[in-house]
Picture: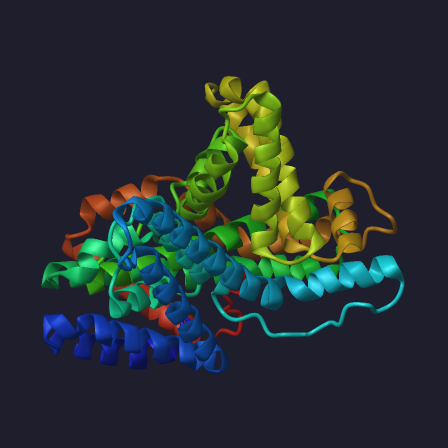
Length: 473
């Protein structure tokens, strides 16, 4: 079920919130759990059991970490350490095992079969369960925190299940750690003021998704339909810029809606974006983009590998592992791996040479980042390697055939989309956010949000382009 769908806006959310508000506080986690499973089941009815099974197994293994059988005092610490290690390894094997089978098996099988020249590994053609990359990472973070002792006592089953399956962040993040919501899971007050502010935030996110991401996405789709190898250099760059806007407003809009829903439910869901397109280096861009994913890889992969504490070459190796996994986390295809390794190369060069210098500039750093980031998004967007090479060639003015989409089409695209492009440029700056927070409680801001909601619903009803790009991850 999409947040930007009639079913969610006018059926699921009103009914759920009504029950959630009138039910006694001690039953709200049960309502949240059941409601989240219904929300997930509408979109993925065949995979609800997989989610429930994963949650149940992970809960049982986390309880096993804290289990204290009767044994002589001198053996308890050693047995506890062994028990925690067994539970952690088992949970990681199960969680990443499911993720591998559903997301990466066919990619690995295709690679092996291609190298062998015949089918020696069967291709399963399984449907990717919605949100499996996100809820897998949340369960893994909980298990690792239990193993490390960061989580000092086990959650009860309903709390843990509600945490993993909480519908605002279940299928596209942000990736929430248990300690960020643990206190509120146990006890929270629902205030009318928070519901009002949550609705405002949700509406703002809905507008970013429907009125900006969906609309500018049609420009990218139009240019790609025209042919990746037949584009004038300016048209190719316009398409790359359009996709850069689309993926940002799509994912940022979803994250803002998730934050708004969390506020309505009594939780604080962490911020996932911090105006990444105003960055003055690619390193800064990744400190501002998908911040909860970057934090997860930093805390659960990079630091355990040694981070930057074991010398220059070990640091580079650790960065390679992190960015290879980051690329593959986004998708099981070669372009995603290439995308991740492209960032590895750029960030390694920045870290060891000019990164600090360009971040200190007022203009050069911005220009540098705004040139590189659209190129990386093209690598991310185009899964066919031949099309990808052709498109990147077009961005450099290299063409394998006659240019079919030239200056005339460029002028037509600009005439059709110039207002939307200006709006996108405006909304990647901090200004709209500052204006929203400054005037959030004024009557005219409420009016603006009502207008945004009306136009968003109108576009949902009549529009055909309404995907969430990150749902496939």
